[in-house]
Amino acid sequence: MDELWRGFTQGIGLLVSLDPEVMEVAGRSLLISLSATIIASLVAVPLAAVIHLNSFPGKRAIITVTQALFSVPTVVVGLFVFVLFSSAGPLGGLNLIFTPTLMVIGQALLIAPLILGLAISALSGVDRAYVDTARSLGAGGLQVAGVILREARFAVVAAVIMGFGRAVSEVGLAIMIGGNIKGFTRVITTAISLETSKGELELAIALGIILLIIALVINIGLSRVQQRA
Amino acid sequence: MLKLENIGHFYGNRQVLKNINLEVARGELFGLIGPTGAGKTTLLRIIDLLETPASGVMYFDGAKVAATGRGRLDIRRRMAFVLQKPVVFNASVYDNIAVGLRWRRQSRSRISQTVEPLLEVTGLKALKDKNARTLSGGEAQRVAIARAVAVSPELLLLDEPTANLDPVSTLRIEEMIADIYRRYRTTIIMTTHDLAQGRRLAGRIGVLVNGEMVQAGKAEAVFSMPHNRQVAEFVGTENIVPGVVASREGELAVVDLGGTLIEAVSDYGVGGEVYALIRPEEVMLAKQRGTSSARNWLVGVITGVDMAAMPARVNVDCGFPLVALVTRASLEEMGLKPGQPVYAGFKATGVHIIERPG
Ligand SMILES: Nc1ncnc2c1ncn2[C@@H]1O[C@H](COP(=O)(O)OP(=O)(O)O)[C@@H](O)[C@H]1O
Ligand SMILES: [Mg+2]
Image (cartoon, rainbow over all chains, first blue to last red; front, side):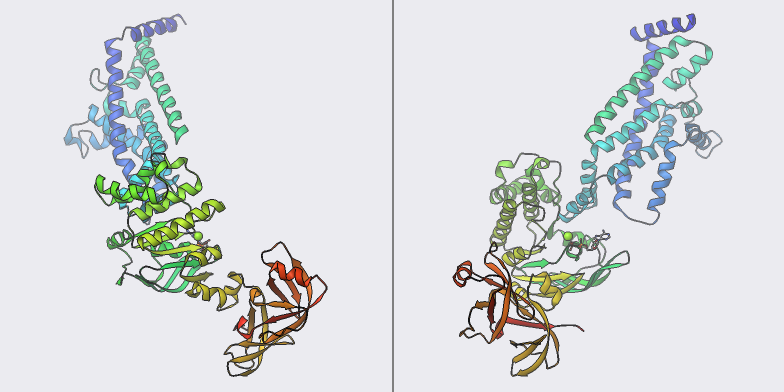
């Protein structure tokens, strides 16, 4: 109990004094997960519009698979990316294993289905009459997509925020393909799990509080956006 | 301008349009009337190329429209379609009206040259900067129509533009449509389930019932001479009486309406099973057999009088139920009351004979 209390006060101390190591790890976490979210969104959101606006065989199946991937265990994606990029793997020549770049790629792969699926359902929420109206006024394919994305913008932003939330809080993938290398690929979640297992609670607690704050901010943002959606 | 040949369409297994043939000339205001579910919206969607018909061919401005491909967007850009439920985008009234021009990549100044006068014409100037989402139903419909007119369509499609509107807004929209038609001479196809509206606005009318174009022609002709019982019922013809052609002399036929003989102008042969449509406003009522030129005088008993209607409606039983419309003044003068005997007279030309399928 004593140890826990000490860890807690010292953790607060690290936070208040803006301890360089804490800040560096937190900053890297945000940078990697934000990059992954941006990349995943740039692919998933337009793809959602394409899938939503067109009818083609297998459309239903694609949506079902996408939704099934929402809850795929992070270690499974980690394993997949690891096998692909490990030095013996097909993409091993790129030398990306245990780099922040690969962590961005891995997290983007992890959350892209989530953003895609949620964006598709966001677009499905837009009345079909908007699409018809836009087309009847002479909108081309891209312009129609622009119209419905605009109409569903809050729900789409909510989908992106959910993606970021999953990326920043996952640990399995970050450890497997990042390796938790100090000063290079160590992020909040991997640092917490390592420090805790070493029994060094103060750093873990300081980072834990930061992660909680991030989660809190995400949730506040999400509920604000969802109120307007 | 527009020609449809044998257009047919299915939703699932249900055939919602059957063999639609229609030609609309440039500069025409064509009214498409029919009950809810008749297929009016579906037909407009096909014309606007939002939907590809299961069968049939469409010609736009003389050229056959391909079933697929990029050319459809180019043709669609020469039309505009105002949906039954007006949809406004989450933007200002001005931006809503400008949107079609932006999609055509017109310059800012050209857009403003089109939109500003249109705001004036449609009475939306004061609302220009308001978010269109905050407008009333009637205002939103005006925005939707202005937005369609803004792209200078060669063919303007209006789907029940006054459905779900209050009477005042309805009048405004009707005036606006008439004004736009006068000003821009746009070819317009407009659907409505409001017959009176179709009659007020359209030059020619098509009647769509159960996916079939049962009659098309001059508005007056459709109303006074419906082709068959379905159209007659839909255009609100009262006095649809079944009978048989008993004899004929030249163009004058004697029709036996269940024992009562009347004369009518018709070319159905003797023995033909028909309906006689007797227009209520053509029926005169009198206490004595009249001396006017009417060929038909029937004896009957008044069964009901509705003074609240304008003109007053009188129900007469003369072997079959007959509705007559008479002015309130003459009704009071004659003192007609239920239970009294009365003579009902109408001309041979006041009867329209249609086929009665067996
Ligand atoms: N998207 C659709 N899917 C299935 N059935 C439809 C669809 N749209 C219309 N229908 C059916 O087609 C028929 C014609 O509809 P519609 O063209 O909207 O008629 P109207 O505009 O004359 O009321 C109706 O029975 C309607 O239920
Ligand atoms: Mg309709």
